[in-house]
Figure 1 (tube, rainbow, N blue to C red):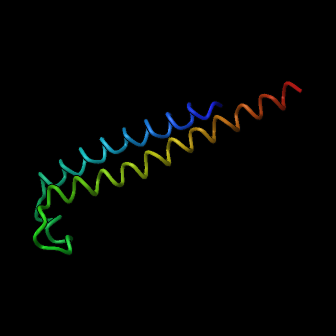
Figure 2 (figure 1 turned 120 degrees about the vertical axis):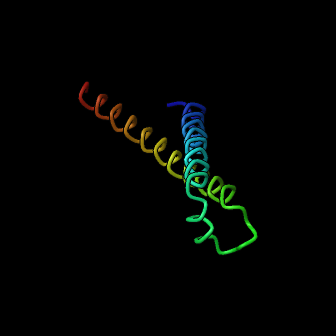
Length: 86
């Protein structure tokens, strides 16, 4: 695996996760803003913005982890293939 491909894969999946997480956070806060206003420790922050940022952060973490896990599986698969071929 080329280093550029590894970086591009993890970065791309993390950005995609960020977009999905932000969309989910925005939708959840739009539907139930009172839920997010009750868990925000600072009362002068808008619940929709807080949920969007929180969702984006969680999406980056989960997406980056998923991309790294996919690369680990690919590395194990190619290693097993080389071992099997001799």
